[in-house]
Image 1 (cartoon, rainbow, N blue to C red):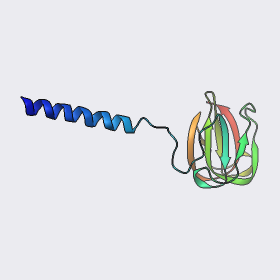
Image 2 (image 1 turned 180 degrees about the vertical axis):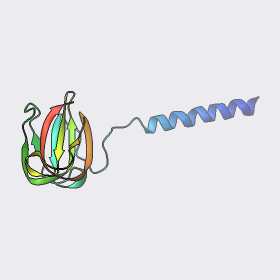
Image 3 (image 1 turned 45 degrees about the vertical axis):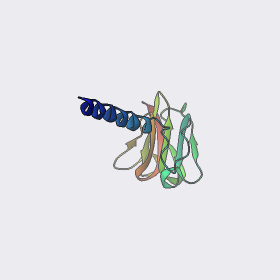
Image 4 (image 1 turned 60 degrees about the horizontal axis):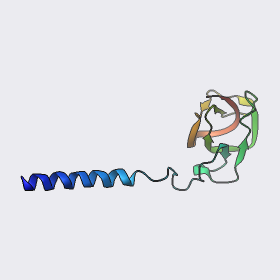
Length: 116
């Protein structure tokens, strides 16, 4: 019975260690820290000079002077729709969600703010 109890205590301790490791901050390696708002980056993993998005400007199409390859969004109520062409054109749009930190599937040349 002592060996069984020792094994159970050891397993519980190992489980607590795994849970403790996952309790850190949620910043992906290489990304700028998450902050309120929306930002488009010309490089992957949030690199390059960020373009700040006005999340209050719902529905207006904005064409970028430099394409975006990654995006960061922290908003409880808005998302971004990103397009491969200027003037919000292209075969498909990609929508971010209201909490996002990701590389885009293709270069985005335009975007609009939409409700989440």
